[in-house]
Image (cartoon, rainbow, N blue to C red; front, side):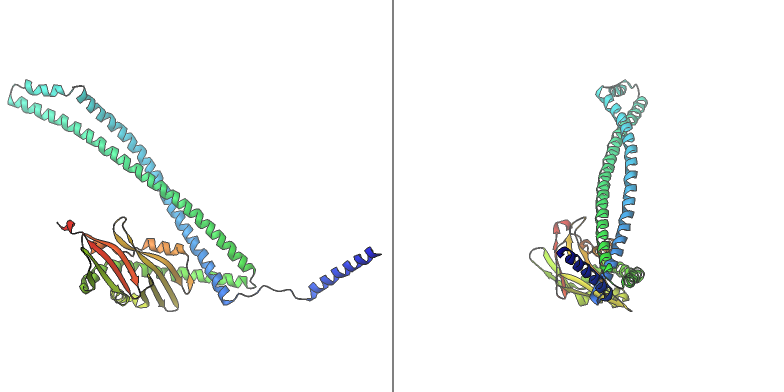
Length: 367
């Protein structure tokens, strides 16, 4: 009887649970908050930009692979040329080693007249010049072959790096997409959010990216004329110990310099602060911002280089791949040789409102 009562009790509990589930409304997926929506849109924009980086890497990989194959073909051709020239130069060296050229010297002593002597001289000069050309050509062709082999090694390294980068970015975009899909599954208006992501990426491609390209391209051209600003402000130079000196520029002066170079910079404001160069701009309803820092580089030659670290479009942060792409395409550097021969940049410092560049002069190059 106890087992029967327990079975009936279980049955009634199960029925009650089913009825409750049908009557009591279950919690629905919630609409995203403003912050959550911003984060979702930002993830969508990042996925879009990393996808663009993947396409860029694929194109570079394809071009590098073609260059690798071309270099391999050239090396095979060059190896055949070197083998042929090596044989010719070997014959020349054997001729000298075996004394076969001694007979030419004997002709000088057997000449019976000045005319015969001159004829022997011309004959000997032609042979010796041909020998020198063969030996020199062997050295040049061998040097060319070694150079092509070094190019091949560098291309192989570049290709390996691109393959690694491609794999890394693929894994990154897969992880971001999975995270976005998981978050969207929790949203009641997932389709509406996806539509906003699509609209954001289309606006970025149509307005945002071209705007960054336009500013970065013009900024790179302006940096090439920066030595003229230095020469026009000798009062900004200060002498240090020995052959050292420094030059400073305020952010107000930088903005004035850029606005005089191109009126488009009326819409973009630069500021020095906390070790960074920051820029904020607005055109119509579009806002952009970027920031980065200057570092001293000595390869391939001494200069200061601007490392673009952060970009934002209408308040949405862009991934590091976008910053790296723009940084590689537009070099915002300053080369001291544009100012004066023998000048080397030793340090760069950014403090609130001011940029200071420390330099050293090598006077020995002037004499």
